[in-house]
Length: 312
Image 1 (cartoon, rainbow, N blue to C red):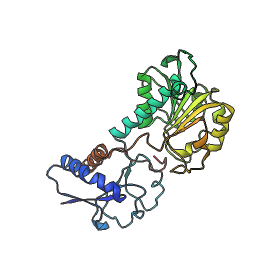
Image 2 (image 1 turned 120 degrees about the vertical axis):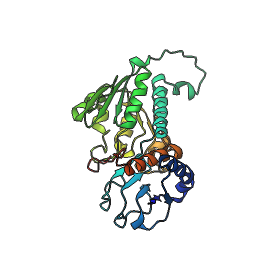
Image 3 (image 1 turned 135 degrees about the horizontal axis):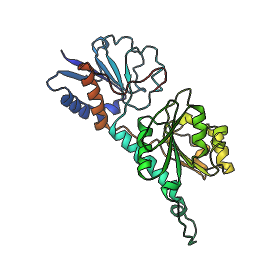
């Protein structure tokens, strides 16, 4: 029996995925007939490879479908879809994870070493300085799921004093792991640098606000490659203006592209990057999708299944 796989995403994504996904499926399903296409009769579809900005928003006609396999790490745009009754998986892939690790460690080191002093120098002053060692710098990783854990472990490998925080209890070797509201307060109290890697859920929105920003050491740094709504923008701008926060490096925003008149663009203590911290790579993402289809067909548990109640 042929396995029918619907690719439900924007046309430009199909151009990049058609070849690597076909190749990954052939390797994962040797000898198995399959059809991968962007247009299939709903009642004949077995799997849906999906991007939340797809035109497909009503899953009711897909009566034979076994799973929706999301191409993105973020699933907040689909978890509330009441027509989706079958398992939903999120994208956790090697390329995305390593891209995030590299971006985060780069910006942590930038602020830890004070690189902007020399990179943005506007004078001819010769002012030698000795930055602290990594072991003398405390970094908090807020959100220690798959991406957060990888970032925390990389920072530990560089010698940083790393605290991880999540809403539920976690354990990571070499990382002081905290959880719950009291744990967040404890994590922020010592966080000279905070990296935000939480999902966007009702429980995490505005997790950095006037109250929590005030709990951080004066002159701390914020790095947000997670989700825009994690931060109360007005509160962050106030904290930057007062010097409570020395600098914020932001990769994600409530509205994207970031509007041209947004105060972040012109603020001297904000770095804006255009949602580039971690991108899904077509080849490695295709391997994850193909492996999940193989597992499903073999009766094995799917990888990275979304908890719809938690939203991730």
